[in-house]
Amino acid sequence: MKFRGKVDNGETIIQLGSLAAVVARLCKKVVLRLTAEKLYLIQPSTSSSDGILWCEIVVSSFFSEYFFEGIKPDDYPNEEIILEMPTDDFHRALKIDRPDKTIPTTLKLKLSREDFSAGQKRAHETTVGGSKQPVIVIQLNLKQASTGKILTLTRDLKVEILARRFWKEYLEPTMPEFDISLFLPQLSKIKSVADKMKHINKYIIVRAYKDGRFQLRTKGSTIKTTVNFPKCDRPEWQNTDENPFSTQKEGPEEAMARVPVKRLIDFTSGDQLKPTRCILNILDSQLIHCFLLLGVDVNLQFLIPNVQNI
Image 1 (tube, rainbow, N blue to C red):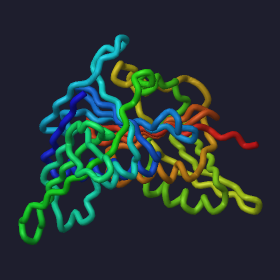
Image 2: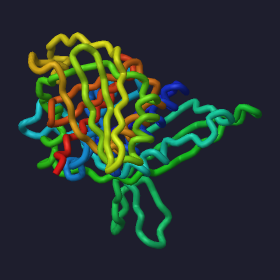
Image 3: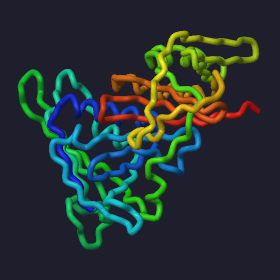
Image 4: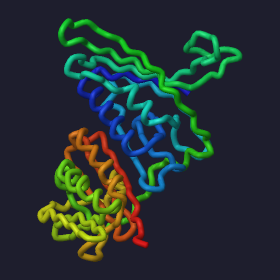
């Protein structure tokens, strides 16, 4: 398996770092699925009880150079590489501490192996007797705004190669037909409301109506709070192969789900990505599907299952 890529646009590098920060808020580990045309960030199936993350990036929109040589299992149509890594490490490896003083110019990524044997100097090669740890070598060039000097940071992100018997768990899932779909108001407004409601109850009721109303509601032992957003537009989906999840069925005039308020707040951290549109899909009493469109070539989806009120 071989992979290397290069990003030479500063704004794209910053966007990738912001995306890593949001992913780190939503899950502790992430699966990196590499294909010839797309890069996916997926929450591991072993840690998705309170939410499921799915993010996809069109390679040509991020990388100026991209070389990929994967493995093609017998029942797979194309070659792939699937890795797992801690999201905190992924975030730190791409984090730019002072983007106002150091401007990113180039980002290079390469899948390699390192020897981490005790007492040995690390080397980007397979060493006999070494542990041969798979890593993604990340090289980031930063230009100092004051002097114009170029700084080069090299970080090694430890990864685990996922066993091929688990690869099918990370194919794109088939989404159900949702009861209600709405364009969300600004995520900063939702965060502001949810931050106040979390002090009343750790769960929040998310409700949407076909006439465009969107509602957040919670209650405690002595107080009940409801906030309404009355005029949200409704997306008009076209059922195509490119939009397998974007369908809305004929059904009730409203739909709701009771979800952990913390997970909703975590999702609103996606506001830093400056999404072009935010869409909420609800399957009544089963789940909410939060969908961020980041231009035409990047999207982030987060599913939060309904929690029954016992």
